Length: 124
Figure 1: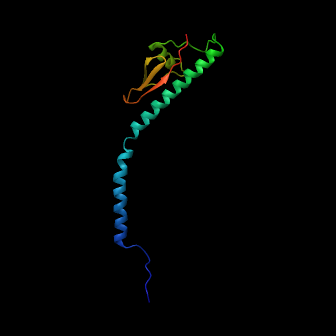
Figure 2: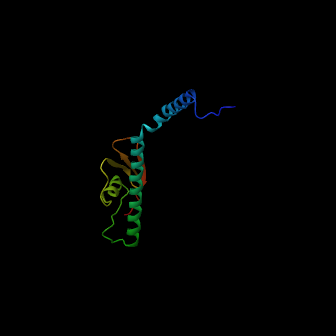
Figure 3: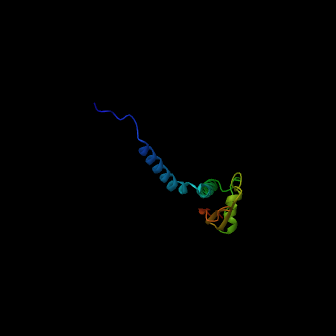
């Protein structure tokens, strides 16, 4: 009578463990720099919120030019920083704004390579 195999041999189990070890060694470096990726994503989020805030300000100012809750953005470096300082809650700590409106740049102070542009719509 033929005997039915009931499990895996030791060699098969060892080979699976070796293959999983090689895959883990190859995949691990891809996940090591999660902090840098998170800082880049956070900087993109701050730039997006500044862009949205400037657009909302422009829309509110267009509807009512004398609205005290809006601010004027001049085509200067002060215009870029005005977007951040007049944002509700202010600019998050650890970020700086540079450039001349309407082309502004927000930079993460912890990761200098994380710098993204946003548009400050000029209102005079």
